[in-house]
Amino acid sequence: MRNIFALLPLFFLFQAAQAQVVSEAEHKIIFQLTEGDSEVHKKFIRQINNILSAAPNAHIEVVTHGMGIDLLKIENNPYEKDLSLLTEQGVKFVICENTLKQRQLSKDKFLSLAGFVPSAVLELVIKQEQGWVYIKAGG
Amino acid sequence: MRNIFALLPLFFLFQAAQAQVVSEAEHKIIFQLTEGDSEVHKKFIRQINNILSAAPNAHIEVVTHGMGIDLLKIENNPYEKDLSLLTEQGVKFVICENTLKQRQLSKDKFLSLAGFVPSAVLELVIKQEQGWVYIKAGG
Amino acid sequence: MRNIFALLPLFFLFQAAQAQVVSEAEHKIIFQLTEGDSEVHKKFIRQINNILSAAPNAHIEVVTHGMGIDLLKIENNPYEKDLSLLTEQGVKFVICENTLKQRQLSKDKFLSLAGFVPSAVLELVIKQEQGWVYIKAGG
Image (cartoon, rainbow over all chains, first blue to last red; front, side):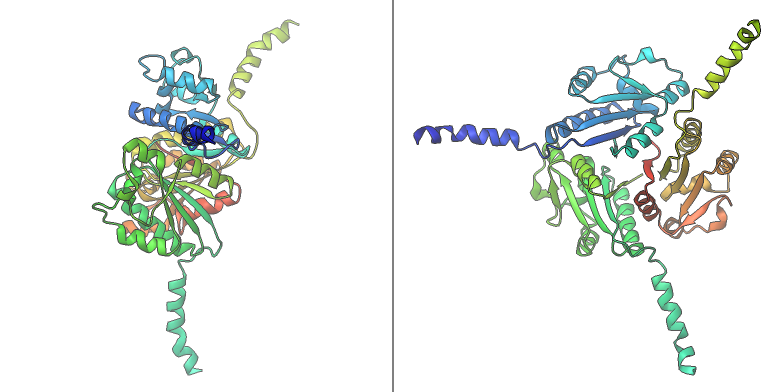
């Protein structure tokens, strides 16, 4: 019996670590990011990490367009490591090719972890039609 | 017959008061509020009241996170009475616990009418999966 | 054979012009516009044109409320021609009557191409219930 009581603290520690998991389901979440502000990006990355803690089996795709594509630029990107870690956990990041044309930017200015879609809005539409849940990121 | 005509003005008055009801259906609406600006909160509260006039049987849940949780703070809250009236009409307000941790705020800083969810985004996702319609609040 | 090769450049030109069509499906997209900023309106109009290029059979409705209704005002509207062209392609623009009351504006201040709905949010809700996909416009 003493052994069992000795294990109690470990048990509660385990509970605490598990407490943040809210759902084991395979949620499919598609985010729209249009803001270029670095502070918004910081909060957004934290938010994705929070979701992966609460719902570790969630599928997440981040669709960036407008200034939002700056989240994925190579130059002066303070979040490269964070984005890389999220990608390793299965999060997908894509850039709108319409925005690239509009802003006259080439694909080689962006992190190799980023994918591309012809139209961000259409990607958001098609994914929703396929049952993905839409969330607009940012303030 | 004169009696019936005498009632006509009352009839039109009744029509006018009813005119704003657009739908009797039990719509399920989930709002995401991320902005802390008091002017935004004012407009948002008016918006919810408008919906309840147009769709009196609508179920409404407001999910706040980031600066949006300030809508529900106790200190210097000009909207406490409005929020209380909305709650009486069945509107539910919830606060993101991830935001509380991040902003290092305790639950007792918030109105007792507010509920709590572990993750705002996950709440928005799960409710949408259950057929609730998502609207992003604010500008 | 020489004739066929002579046609090759034309073929590639045709491919390039077609390349932007991503989907032939009849997507149903409902946009919410709440921002009054002219620069936001400019980007938004470009965005709708991009969608119609990528998905020429898409059904698009733009629901404006708050400051967003300024997109459709008559006075000093730099986008009247663009909006008119979009309307000809089937895009529908509607204005929230709750906003008109709130901002004390009359319907005759707005372009004749604009329609009206009693409540913007309820329009967004009902359309989503009918299978339309929701996208929040703007930054």
